[in-house]
Every structure is written in C-alpha cells, then in structure tokens.
Amino acid sequence: MNFHYYKETDSLYIELSPKASSESAEIAEGVVADYDETGHIVGLDIESASKNFNLSSVNIKGFEPQVEIHPQ
Image 1: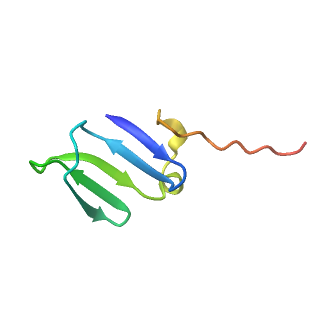
Image 2: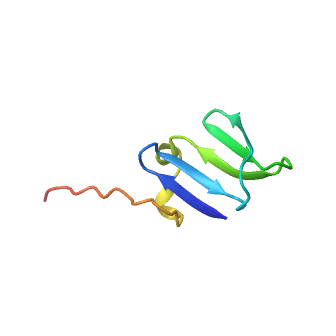
C-alpha cells in the first residue's frame, strides 16, 4: 500500500494494488474508488485531504507539512 499526496489538487491517493484502473466511481462525497478489470478496488482518491486528515502523521510520498513561523 502506498500513499501519494498531490499538493496542486490537495488530494490523497491510496494505492492498494499496482494493477491498472479500468473503472472509477465516487463512493462518498469527495472519495473516488478505482477498480481493476475484475472489479477489485485498486485505489482510493480523497479530495481536500489536508483539510480532513492529519497528513503529517503518515509517511506519504509528495507530502511536505506546512511549517508556520511566528515572530518572537
């Protein structure tokens, strides 16, 4: 299982299988499941990921936590 974060779209893709996706369907608001040719889920795409999850607690490819600097 691999996690991929895309900053441009603030989406998190959870790759469950290296198989190619042949079909996609929105299974909940902002969550799209990708299926292979046999109907098995190969990945999940989650929109607005940084607003819904603490992404810094998971090792995600492409995710760089935003650091806030406060003047002293």
